[in-house]
Length: 400
Image (cartoon, rainbow, N blue to C red; front, side, top):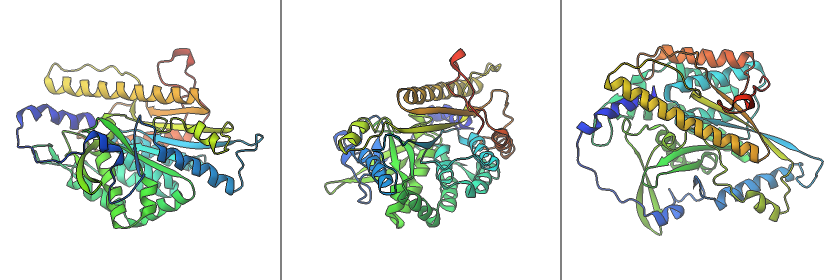
């Protein structure tokens, strides 16, 4: 799993190599850089994005044209949103949960789906719906470590990402891109997060817009973003994006978005949206949303006796840091829903599940996680209405 891949980083101190030449983009040009000439396809988390706000206003205007009036104070609408976390092989849990949710007959069509790391791989299929449940099952139960990575130490990573690249090329093809483009035209949105290591910021990519642009360049970029979001640093090599500003080409180094956030939404780039919508004559006071968060990992501390050896200590330390980061990201989303018009719903791997994985991507363990998520959702998952640790404030939601 993720922590085992991170363990490879223990030996990084014993690896030396020559750094390849780079032409990194200066910080003051980050916001104006384009890729393949594509504009307004991404935003930096934490910085308000005029293009993203404009896009959401266009969505409201599109719905008005289709018969729903935001000026009718008697009307209201609930949007369903899904945020899928990182978690490497633990993504099998989220894949199973989505499949069981479909089987139960209560899985909604999501207006917005976000994904990061392993969640970036799941997110496009989650947006497109239950017809891709078998694809998710295949991805997360029929693959092993050799299908994801190959040990190949170098000056910037410990494994080769070629197996993962081939897998992405196999499952994310031109036909899938066209399907996502169709949903984009309907007003549905798909976002994936990567980490710009130079800037120490998460980049949110509008994958639906990229799909709608179409063509070979768009497909290549789509795949590259999925790869970057899934590339655990130190273990996997970073992914470079060539960007252009005023005729000059620079490069950006991107890695797994999970080093910045384990799960995300768009509030950081939509600051000032309500005001902008009001200036357009659009009343959003009746717009509500239900946000569902799938945490592909644990969300509560679990006790485990750790052997007194370096590898075990390192594994447990990384595991603890990732879980703590995830908890912070979940609390942030919870606060966002409480400040707005949102309904919070959280699912995660229960602490009663004990991993029996014998390798980072163990098919047996992944099948067990898939089955666990599937059965929980099929029975009607008791969505948590607040993050763990809030004591009496935590209540379980209605079944899905």
